Image (tube, rainbow, N blue to C red; front, side, top):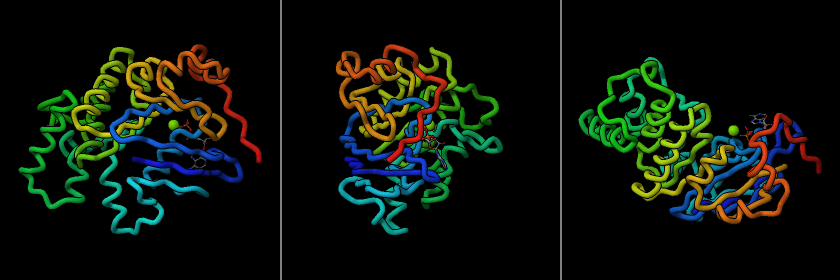
Length: 252
Ligand SMILES: Nc1ncnc2c1ncn2[C@@H]1O[C@H](COP(=O)(O)OP(=O)(O)O)[C@@H](O)[C@H]1O
Ligand SMILES: [Mg+2]
């Protein structure tokens, strides 16, 4: 379980996360929604320890991550797979080399073992046999799948997705959502998915939280989400998905 307690993060005096409290339970698919710029990616980066909170703390399986030393940090990181917003593949490397990167850097596995593992993950994301292709030969949806194969190469316990369907056409988006569901079941992982695509929310979520003005203003299942009377959540769910207005900086 991941437990986020009183998390606070500001940038140059501008509060992004004011006080976030959140539990992520084992095996669930938790979707985080919220308008552009509300701090969803910042929250994920704090969970991954890529960014440190100003205040508050995060427990991963009861261990506070800020207490983890350099050596244990790797053990902690290994538990997380992360699909970045832009898939972030290296263009000069083949698909197989991209996926194998964490194994090459952090394990003593032989070439043969690595190749087997890569093939297994490619099969899992529905792209068997494309090891030798270069990222430039892939469609947007395929790149996301390859990014996902890399995210799960170390057999993580938690998989975090930042806007996994952004930039994809509706059919590809649906197939990525389907894959997220399938992997969650098949790998028995816990998934945290950040999105502002309501269709994705409906396809994926076991539970939904909405981040707004630095706090979680809604927590519930899909039924709760669709029947809430909270006007801000209601507008997000039923109205425009993403407004052009950036949220105002939160003041003390
Ligand atoms: N490294 C950073 N330095 C300064 N400001 C940042 C940094 N990362 C994010 N921010 C700011 O924090 C706010 C939330 O960003 P982000 O979490 O990326 O939003 P989103 O909900 O769209 O993912 C934005 O106003 C952004 O400009
Ligand atoms: Mg973001």
